[in-house]
Length: 225
Length: 243
Image 1 (cartoon, rainbow over the protein chains, first blue to last red):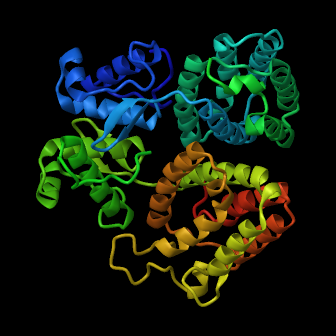
Image 2: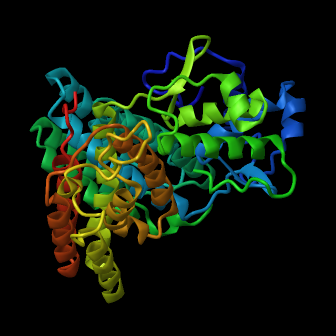
Image 3: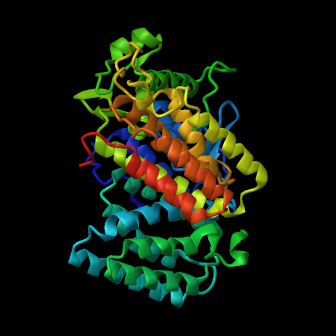
């Protein structure tokens, strides 16, 4: 599975509906199903060779992840890719990360602080050398650096929401390409690393104010490729 | 989140049936007809809802995705058992989302925003109403309800009124993703706050609302954010305390 969908505690029995979910998820992320493409239960029944129930369940879960959207009696389709959605999602993400950082900075062990600083340093380095619209590698490093905080926040709901929102953000970003302000992001991660080293929760949280309102997107980055 | 399901319109496809079933079970959980921790048996739900097992299972699966139902395959399905730790988690998430919106939006609030917020604050702090601090009544607003959650402190009106003030800037943010994420957290909060006896410090609601209004009036985003966070994560006394 390309993205961490399961909840941290998730030792769930693998049911048939999960397989349908995984395969549909893959199809959406790898472009087998295109953004905005209609999906019909009957087609999927035929494709996967399963009944309608596991398909509806998988579609419901994908809808909660904002990868599928539907209007009752009108359509069910792969989510459309809209430039506006990325800054909207990152604003929410920044609010969640702010809390994650506040909660975890004082809880981290010395080893975890070192781990976190290494991740932030890596994210900062790749941001500094970033150019162009293909931000896949960069997004991966940012995820690696920032999800660390929600995973160590001790707040399960928070960790779950960051993962869920992260999925749709990656989907939107991978389909549109991103023009990111690598220099600004690098500074943000450097400051965050320093605040983590000092276990200064207020300073760590304040870093996210600089990322609000999509501040780290270059103007053209808001447009589709 | 799905918009409010529109069942009963046009063809009653299976997904619409399960939407309706989901809504009915959700309502029953939120209003206490189904108590926290109560076992859910398929046969009883089939009789109660008058539909077959499949839409019921679909609805339960979906409610388990948002943490209101707990399912252990081949063991049990039950209404989730809310804990103070879960409540504290949800309050913290609700706080960061609403406070961040206030931090960025309060500085650009308009005169009509301020007027609307002050209306809502007035509704919240009116002394004789049920929306005042629950302790002012000597007992919770649910005290005379015969539901299983009768011990709860928070009535629907209280929650709605508080949410209308706390969530004011988020609602005005024009960010549909924020609004839908918040809605999901609110649903959990309603469930937790009704199932757990959580009193609020007397007067805390009123002083918070007034302070938020002052911050909005000054276009002071940092203060607005701080007031929201303080109120939600420190003023709402979590009895028994988070783990």
